[in-house]
Structures are given as C-alpha cells and as structure tokens.
Image (tube, rainbow, N blue to C red):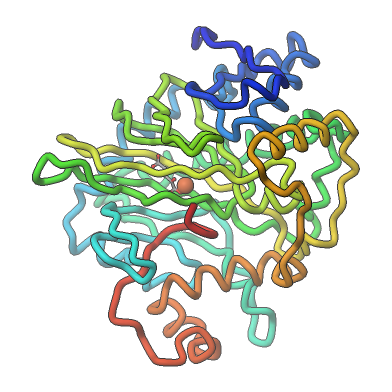
Length: 383
Ligand SMILES: O=C(O)CCC(=O)C(=O)O
Ligand SMILES: [Fe+2]
C-alpha cells in the first residue's frame, strides 16, 4: 500500500493554483468515501492535470513482471527488433528507434515498442481506411523472448479495464452521471484500439542532460503511465510554466490528461504538457497506456452539461492564468475520431503510409518521402 502522505490541500482556492507536488489519489477511497474521492479527483484534474493513482486494482505481481520483462525487449539483437519495425505494420504497431533530428525537429532519443490488445483487423477493401488502425501487434517470437506477449497483454487488459472504470469516476467527478462519457466510447462500433508503448531512454553518452521526449501534450483521452525504473526525469509543466519533477512512486500510475479529453470537456480539463529528460547513467524504462475514444465519434457533436460549480472552477483557473475561457472547436473536430487519429499517424510515418495506405500517400507527402525519420510519438501537438 502506498502511504498517502500528500492529501490535496489546495481545494478550489484560486490563489493556490500553482503546484510543486503531484497529488496522490487513493483508488480505494472511491469505496470508502466516494464524495471525498470525487472532490479530490475533480480538483486534481481541473487545477493540476496530473495525478498519481495509488492502491489501484492492477495486481502488483503483473507490474513486477512487466518491469522485469520490458527492458529485455530492447536487449534483443538489432536484427530481431528490425524485423518488428513499425514499417511492417499496417496498424502502426511495432518497434521504433528515434534519435536526433526528426520530421518535427524533435531532437529526442529513445527506443520504443508499440502494441495494442489482441484484435483482428476488420477492414475490407472499400471500407474506411481508419478501420486499418485496429489489428494484431507485431510480437517477438516465444523463442526470442518467452512470455513477453503474454505478460504485456495481461498488463494491457488490466489497464484497459481500469481505464473504463476510472473514466466513469472522472465523469462523476465532473458532476455528470457515471455513464455520461460512455457515448464517446461507442461500444457498438468498436473502440479505437487503445495503444501501449514500452519506452527505453538510453543514458546520455557524455553525462550531459539530453531530451528523451521533448515537451508535448498527448493526443489520448487519458494516459496511464508506469515508471519502471527509479529515474526522476519525467517532468510536467505547472500552471505558472515551471517544470516540476514527477518522481516514480511504487505501485502507482501517473495519469495525465490528453487532447481528446480536453476537447470532449471543452477545456474544463486541459491537456497537460510534459517531457522526459534523458537519464545520466543507466537507461530509463517506462510503459505508457493511451486510452482513446470510438472510431465514429465526432467530438464537436457532444455536449456535456457540467454543473455550475465545475464551470466556476474552470473560470477561476482560467482567470488566474489569464486564459480565455471560451472554447472553440476546430473544423477537424467535426471529423470522425478514427480519421483524426489516422491522419496524425500518416503524417508521422511516411514508410507505413507508402506501403499500406498508397492511395493517401501523395496527399500527405506531395514531395515524396521525407529524408528525415519520423518522431514515433503519439502526440497531438508540442507544448
Ligand atoms: O516515458 C514517460 O515517462 C512518458 C512518455 C510520454 O510522455 C509519451 O510517450 O507520450
Ligand atoms: Fe506523453
């Protein structure tokens, strides 16, 4: 059990909006004292945007197994990793190595393995291209890395389950019914396959701090992050624009808000900027789970009637920050979520686009294949 040493003391006091510590939310409090749990969650999400979730239901043994096996993926011979390269996956799963200048001039350095839950691809000739997004990941063979697929999928299934439960609590924390946000998850049409990334950040060769992932906000609905080593190199930007460390805490997830949730709530919950510095010394490992909404949801079509007290908190925050509280959708927010996600991935991965989406290649790459590699990041925009 994690000791809850830092209960949220900030409440809704607008004069105390800046934060230097990330709140710890105790999952078990949702059973013991739900009104208190919901108040803490609401405050953490509206005023801070990052939280640790402690005493969560994902079994500790599974987390320990993931921490042990995840680094082993990167110890596979380069040849084996190259066979699993994302350029071989229509569904944008697989291995990516990012180092130095990329398409978006992100000078970050990391390796990653991207996967999703066990799903078959339902796409058939003539159907929308975004249906190609869901599908079976590329896995190392059992001989190469015994139990990796099994362990990572078990972990994924637990976190996916947690993500739906947590989303219902978020809905309640915002003063809506527990099932109000269910319309975004569109059970009948099949969700977009949530994505998971195993990340390795090598130590900087010269002992100088470098960039592991540059400042960004996630494109996800919510992100559930497992910090698998003891490094203190994950940082979030607080409301005053300062970078605050988010040190690992045993058996917690770090949860942050993505751009999809920001839009769905019309900025009651703004996406939170964060970055990872390259470690000095031993490599850092982490596993990020990105929840996502239904393929056929158009974000701008949904309106959630937040109660006055929730809107007041948003106005107080925005006033303090000097930010305009009016929210405007962009034209893209009328598109299907599947199209939006596919466009983002096509823009980042020229090689996958050329091979598996040839009809769209010239639209995204009118000048042909770019010389620089892709970013491999699941980003909506840089912070
Ligand atoms: O590795 C981490 O701790 C964060 C990863 C991250 O922010 C991302 O992949 O979007
Ligand atoms: Fe991120």
